[in-house]
Length: 251
Length: 244
Image (cartoon, each protein chain N blue to C red):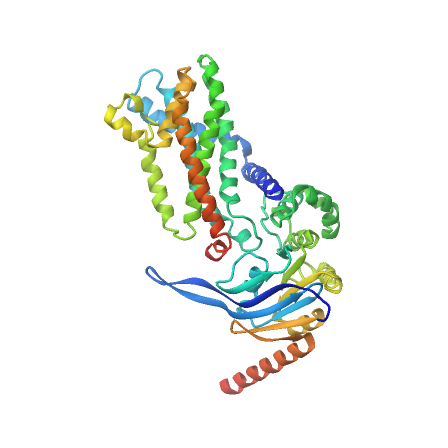
């Protein structure tokens, strides 16, 4: 277990530094990429469509930052057994570590971007509120949620490679249903009930309340997301465990 | 092998890979069909057979990377068997030092153990100051040297070697071959896979001969390599006369 933990930590560090070393601007890309990504959406929805009014920039930024973490982790984590195929057929390692490493790499990048977002909020005159402390549990719950979905998909894709395309299209669809562009609470009641079955919608809504409204998160909602994620993680671990020495034949 | 302990046994093991044969259709390709033998503590066991006969799959099964689909691999003690895996997990943009650490961790060591081994790994690799340069600036030979040095010093209980004698330039090739010879002479348990009869005979105590996924013979290195030689020279001769 000790050796696995050491491996996970070092691999996360190694991948991050390799990524920084690979490009001319290196670590600067961690700033440039999300800023570009967010500017595109701001331009389309804030400027072209004139949506939302005054607070819309902040509203959109929070949604995008939180969504991006989820989206990137799943897209690269669900195929992590394939991307590490060369390693998997040469040495024995428990397979769950591969999606976990991807999630942690993306978490590190997210934390960095979140820090920039907080700075941006402060600089543009949003007062820091005590509710910001609630980011800690909020981020932790989302991290567990992301790890659960990523691992679960990673258990499936070696068996059914086509599932990757299903997930990629599903993510694009979910992006529009998670309330990145609109306020879920402003939807009609009977819609809301359905939209709130999506943990990402719940999480994004809570982030906004914490960061922009100075409110505490809805702890019950977080609890349900955590419970749901924990069950999925246990399921994923069982599948990984069951097929631990079968996966090398498939990748 | 009187008085020596059996540490691992294969009993009628077989393993297949799924092959795509058409739209939504697969068949089973049996890489190994029926292989049985015992591995004794401290011996050097050779596995001989033609290319593509499932030798590498066999090593992966012994290493515990893949489970057999038929029969069983019995581990009499919980020992770490690992492949002499060269350059495993290397990332070109990282330095030699970082890659050595990463490789060591992937091979199952914890960080503290890797750190202890690093000076010896660096010395054996003869990379000098290059160790802190990114691996993508290395020549093929330099990469091979680093990869071999890490794999050599990780030192598992059972060392599995897949045709890797002689990596890098001529000098290092001799040095790495000597290092392997040294290990085969020691009390370490080693399994070597090759289609090179001469190499197997010179390094191994006992030999397992695999033919068409079956164990064709198990016995002393001299006896089995002789039989193997006879079979394959006569087959080759027959093919020559047929085609001629």
